Length: 141
Image (cartoon, rainbow, N blue to C red; front, side, top):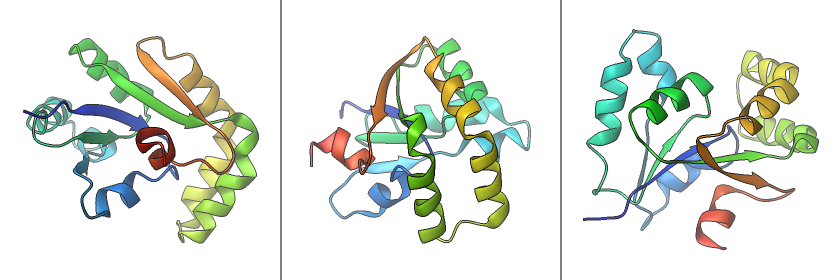
């Protein structure tokens, strides 16, 4: 069985990119899809079924989802950018053609959301520096 890593990574860090890479064994499970329908238990079950099968399970950094996983006994690696990288991430969101309302929300709440992640005590933290992506910190590339 594989030693699967549960990795919560901020938007724009490269989760979807890595999942599409040939030879990289990962899946992305998005909490908001379950939350909208009140399916939090199914969220946990879908994550559990991938353990031992994939190398990485990528999830969002939504604190509610992180707390739910912590309460279920999961160890989570939390990856997010430095506060000062707001404009760099704005460029990333524009480059990937993110919807305007998505970009607006992320820019409006940037510091609040990053600061909230810094307070997560039940995760191992990796803070990305300028120009870094998930692949850099996970694979050392």
